[in-house]
Image 1 (cartoon, one colour):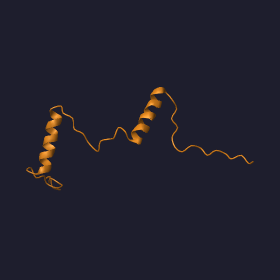
Image 2 (cartoon, rainbow, N blue to C red; image 1 turned 180 degrees about the vertical axis):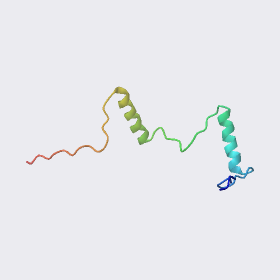
Image 3 (cartoon, rainbow, N blue to C red; image 1 turned 30 degrees about the horizontal axis):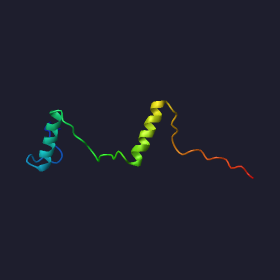
Image 4 (cartoon, one colour; image 1 turned 90 degrees about the vertical axis):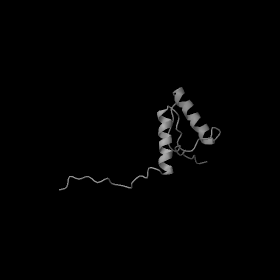
Length: 77
């Protein structure tokens, strides 16, 4: 059995644009800056309004039911 270890995976190219971006990002984090990730959410979207309503209900202590509402029994006329 060999005790030599071989570095696995794709090697990094130090002068690449990606490495420069990663280094700039790490420098911003180290300086206490903000690093945003992902697509920003629109404050006026229907989903954000729904999430805000749900958060308000939770803050008021209301019960939030999950899933589809139960089917109502039909009354024969």
